[in-house]
Image 1 (cartoon, rainbow, N blue to C red):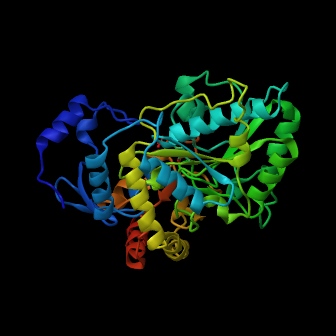
Image 2 (cartoon, rainbow, N blue to C red):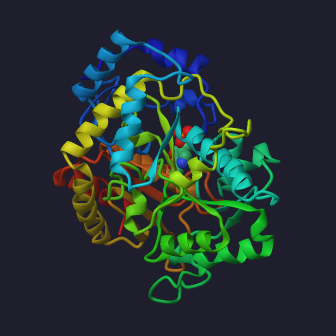
Image 3 (cartoon, helix red, strand yellow):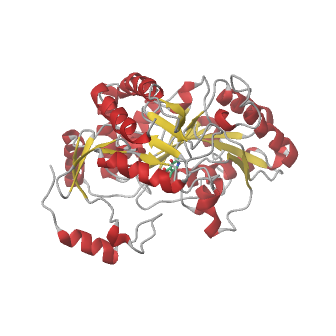
Length: 451
Ligand SMILES: Cc1ncc(COP(=O)(O)O)c(C=O)c1O
């Protein structure tokens, strides 16, 4: 339930909080929403207005808000053991690692905990570099190939893997050794947009780059099963299989960044299950606890883990430690969250209501909607100004987002991702979304996009 309005929160925010990705000058005239409470798929602002949160916070509250079960599990854990680091061990971390291993395909069963998606990715990149050097002694495998438009986090390594120049530019030079290839963007693809389906030219770019750079210099490929914040680009049929085959051919590790796609978002429990492949390393955060507490996880397959074994070799260990990674309370939240997710089989609702929502969005008759794409409850609407696919200007996108909000629905957009192409509205609601709530999202969007 919404709490009482406190003008102090707004004053203190404007005076002392530093928000990311936001111009603070003039913020008084357009202050951020003050969210005071939430329940199910809805959030409430301090003035008591209700909004359908079609972004699940930031792609993360998968089981929805207000789940008492998670709160109780965390309270019990904090009472029993508020903290201990994983320099030793504790029950919640071991149990959650075991639970994840049980949900994943055989062999993907070693879990390194951290605190966020960026840290999970940073860990995966470091793991891959150290592992590649151990698996290929005498070679210098350090390069990582990622995709334009992909997002992997804000820390320097994860940002170097990120293929969004507006997010990178202010901090360059970034970490050496990161290369980018085009994303699977059939709508604007230079390989195949004139053809009815994807020809996987974009997937073949990975092999071309590996050969050009020299396979003995390449440690890993990193990709999101569906590019999320960069504008919603699902992997086309055969794409992930092609990446897996390329990695196998050249001894390169395949990292799947499942920070958004993990835990039901795409209509499967994990995004890579859209294809019949097994990655070498996985990254999770967001849906792992449904954001009730911060937690990141990097899962390695047995052959990655085994590369770090060796009694007589003092370098034979993953050289990293994290004070808060695998915090007992976060792991307790993760366990309770996975209980809910698996008991309610929320990936099935994600698949069914997601397909329904996509179909309804595609039925909107508006020249401003160039394409609706996505899978499960991860959906993008590419907005255009004309029949030549000219991207809708960013100013208009901001306005659209605001108008939809005025109709009671919070949607996202791919701001700061690619110069000139910040024209995708994004939907990523809780996986509990009901069809009537999907209808409400469609009605709000239809009401503002014009014919
Ligand atoms: C695919 C992907 N990887 C990594 C991250 C970074 O996660 P965090 O914001 O928790 O650091 C994000 C964040 O949105 C993401 O979408």
